[in-house]
Length: 277
Image (cartoon, rainbow, N blue to C red):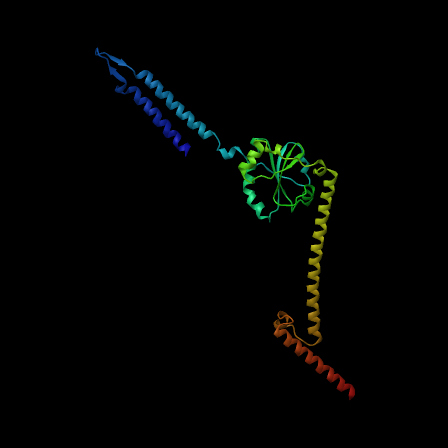
């Protein structure tokens, strides 16, 4: 829009300055009848004003929008790069994708991250479902959890979860009023290293148990199908759609099983009679 207005504004500005320099309104008759020329200085002033207007429009066109000045500086912390937060100033959010409160925090945190570079603070996030080791290292017992870190000193953020509150917390250095985490429970301490390893091990065991349970259920299902087929073949049944789709315990299933039992009893009686004869 400004690009379209620039030529129009410049055209009218220069037209106005040109017309003003030749207009008789700028010449006044003195009492003695002699004409006094006043258009020179007025023409110069109008030209200067129009030039300033065009320059101002050019500056507006050249300047990027405010949103373009701040790119999203949201960083992702993992087990492989978590030691980066030990240097400089950081605000770190621990979250899980399934957490409703974490989902509500997503937009304010992203807006806060847009200001990180301007404020000289690193804004980061940690997905605890993907990084169980960091969940144990920072003793994450509730979600979302936010930590402030300044040169390796950690403090837990307990304030409101809006962009404005985050900005004032960092800009006004409100974190100084919060007691830092004890060095015994710092993420790089021996105790927290042990906790991180324990969380990783527990998640590995849990994943293996789930996988084993799924494999057992799949194997049990295949065995049931094989037993059903063998039973049908043994008693002369046919694998029609009714038999394969009806489950035992249903009225249709009980009728089918009763017919199989009667057939088996009849076969046994015939075998006994043949032995007697």
